[in-house]
Image (cartoon, rainbow, N blue to C red):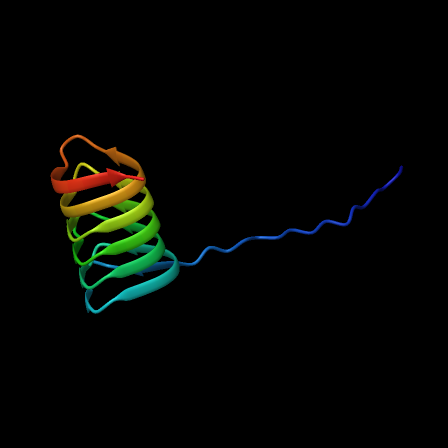
Length: 115
């Protein structure tokens, strides 16, 4: 019987995600280097790598992010590489993105520009 062992090294890349639940209200700007998931009320600008807002979220401010998924209310401008607007979203503002997708049922009052 021959037994063989191999040197194995496992590298796990951890991704940090900040979560703001529906019982949270924020007045002020938010800066996050990685991911932000929110269902909260936010009054202020958001600068993040990736933003995912849900149906209960209410954001009044501008968003700068590489990847944005909007599911709640937004009154402000968005600048991103990739922007997805879910059917539950209510968006008012200017959108500036490279990639845009909009689900049926979303409420929009926007000016969009693809770069």
